Length: 351
Ligand SMILES: N[C@@H](CCC(=O)N[C@@H](CS)C(=O)NCC(=O)O)C(=O)O
Image (cartoon, rainbow, N blue to C red; front, side):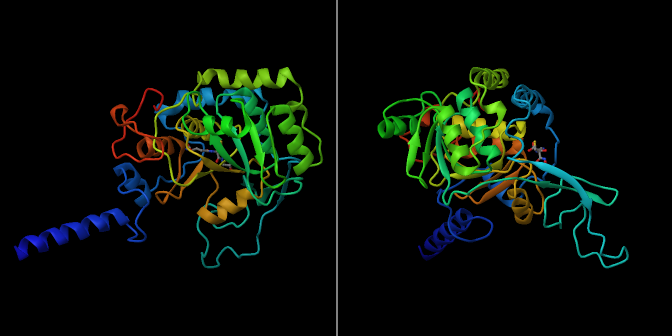
């Protein structure tokens, strides 16, 4: 009997240790996590800049259409300028190597260093909001895309509440809050202001967080909306349809910018799965590029941080796997929103 009790006590403590994760820290908010999650928490993928996983080549190609049709709108911050400046040459060549190779030590982000000169990118950004703005929207909507370009250009942090078609959480929440199922919808807690209508939202954002001058490509009326739609078309509505999923307790954090095809394929999953996320926009010229560099030792987007599981990772294809595994539910397990489930599955939309 004593032996039996000891055995089961041992098994229980082993199970608790397993639930606490490799760091042995606080128990995770999820009772247990998928093996994919454990794998990525222990050994996240190494960043591989501009590398495309072969099975994602078509996805990345079609996700690049937005950048082409929109002539890069959203990929540069307001007032973007680039110059070549002399790189730091103070350290003698034979000095002890105290810095990591390949520029990982640098405190400031630089895109490229050639012949002793490095790129320095600057911006002209206005007032910063004290707390993130909030947007109710979904990935495949051209009007929402316009607004995403605007917040990317303005380098704002935005908490996204994804509202895919048939969505169970944020669509109904918006209707209860503001009366209509229409997207995008902006909430600015700093100015205690909220509004529908993409063009009004864009003008408001540039008035409040810049000098009021909306870039030409965002103020061409139907032309702006049509080119946004053309850019989204090759993705065949990805990110617009609801996929049954578990709800996270806390919003995820995604570093990226509008226009990056690698970021887009991640946002499509966040959108379809109704996973709220704080976007740390960091288009070219953003000071947040240096912040991410300091935090992780490199700059590459997408970079996902999931406070619910402790996972922090680069690499779009693997982030997609992670999200589908951690937040997917099988069809026979679909539960009321807000509850968690252990078994995961992929749907045709997951890929
Ligand atoms: N293999 C990576 C490639 C990601 C990538 O190269 N992203 C670009 C943005 S589209 C980047 O971070 N470039 C670094 C830079 O601009 O300095 C993935 O799939 O996530």
